[in-house]
Image 1: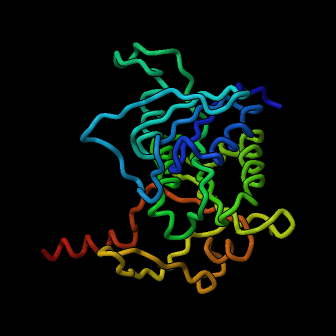
Image 2: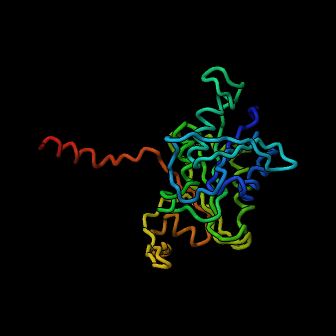
Image 3: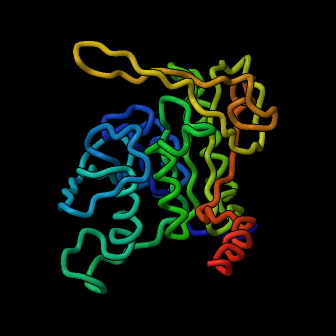
Length: 269
């Protein structure tokens, strides 16, 4: 068996520094990896892949666990900001303010986990999700990214999510994620007894049943998904059936089939 250096794990989220689910994931990985946390100082759910460019960001070192060697920082930005800073600056320079080549002796991150999020991020939810954006940002930097989300409103599947992350690190499964790809992993409303296992799935495209109610002079968004009306090999459908879904996403969103059509159109202009 090949002798690897200890895996260096970055953990991000969109629920903020106070998230107990993020802390549970970090503590579960500590025996198997060097764990570093970069997360927003406040909740940033639903911000998608927004990042901060017109104002500065504050970075604060924080203590999140009494008995775990977890290096943790909170940032004033979004989940994408946190991962961008961690991979684009901190991994090379630490918290040096003096520019390239003048920082601390840092080791690159091997894998980035984003989560564990309370609330599903399957199907079109992934397009709005700050949690998924954390994993996507890692993929943009060439680092394997894995978003972890729980559909249920309780922590029933948190233990399963932690076990999955530990397996990925111990067996170095993250090395099998191609460059430019990241995993969107969702766990169902289930208990250990009713959990049906894992499925590799495609992304469902069914939209929410969005509607707005008018209360106190404000429009409030509400709605849900038509879970059972999605393709039977999609993440939404299988998640609703009690499976954990692993959906590989690509950062290259080019529609290859449309290139030829557009090229023909250009010739007519």
